[in-house]
Length: 378
Image (cartoon, rainbow, N blue to C red):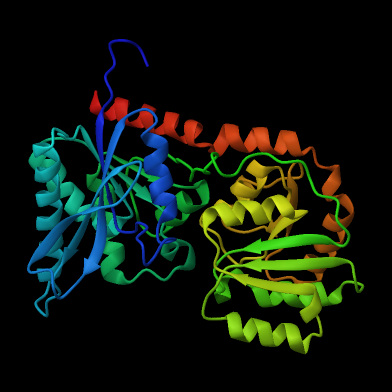
């Protein structure tokens, strides 16, 4: 940044954002904001959802040690569009509060199309650009309702720039009639936490899965693949929670691999980083991934990745840093596990980490956002 370039005031408007009761909800959105804050002044208007005690809406400060954050809540209604109107009013009220504090916005950065209408109304009122980041897996899963698809089409045409987190997501959006100016900006990795570390050489080696225990993650396929390996080949560690956990634990017992599999449940980010450092490699057998932040996190630590060839994963994983197998193929996944057990130490962990930091680190993604913001604010 030259001496003549001032830091811009950026306001993030997000449908998802971490809170004390939901610490992982939209944690990647906060990391985007943190990345941008390395180059500009960033404040956040976080959607706290509908609450009966917020009449008609409420704007409250939220505790955050890095970013100025306001949480917006609004009352539900049986009338069509009434709750949405209250949310728009809450966004405008939040912006007024930021302005009174001396933070007049130069640009609004909305995260996912659900808040796009509110961001556009505020942008028009303030006469400033609006950027839309898109993360939603509904495009990849084909599960977007008609009303939401129409809203996404409207918002994408009207905002100044649409920034999907992967090329795969961009293509899937376009296939569903979403049009606009596109520029891919990937999800960032918290490189203050996911720091490089030399590989462990324990035997048997640990394969690590991190993610929600939902059907789309195909953890049942992973358990069946582990059961195919010779006894003592691999330990499997599963970090995450979700509605399928009890069923998956029962499956591990049925497959007689309970002693080889450890379910750790939900862990905060700093503990996830610890578990990646303690593992030999990451494994992600999902049927679809809009981005796969944990893949980039594992690479940032210096661990290779075994993953399904699906969604955005091939944009991140190649022969140089891991192994891809066909999605949904139990036999191929088992063979991939066997290969990774033998070959994981053959990857240069320092190169893996350096490349990931250069592509996905907070500084790297922050620079990309700075380029976007300045090109539009000009």
